[in-house]
Image (tube, rainbow, N blue to C red; front, side, top):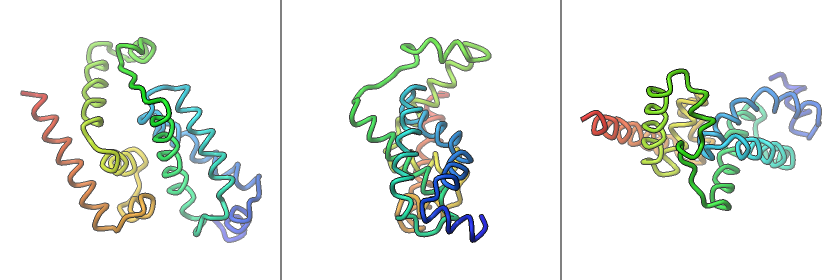
Length: 173
């Protein structure tokens, strides 16, 4: 991101914002979908994220961290929607998701297993795993996005991955 673009972005230039946001919108949708487990709600999360990011662009300290900031905003929006809706969507209630799977048996089992594993994590652990393995953020970026010290980010991610490993081993037995 060059200095001129960063300056325009920080000052609230709508065109620059749209360009920057369009570069991360697919990733934001994937992150939102992991949380809300529903395409319509995930699109709502992306829309709300766009709104919050545009309104709060002046609070962004370093424009080069726009992506990290937008992902964290999307996670917060997804959590807000979950709190508001207080509902759970099981894969059995969503035949459209299972219909898209290449092999119904294996994909459904993998989806259910992954869903169960991710749900075994608390929100902080889930966010750390998503930011690291879905969004491919570095530990420093995760630390900034979650507003926690780097050592806490490392510990949270380590514990989450350890918990996932143990859970998956228990499921295999």
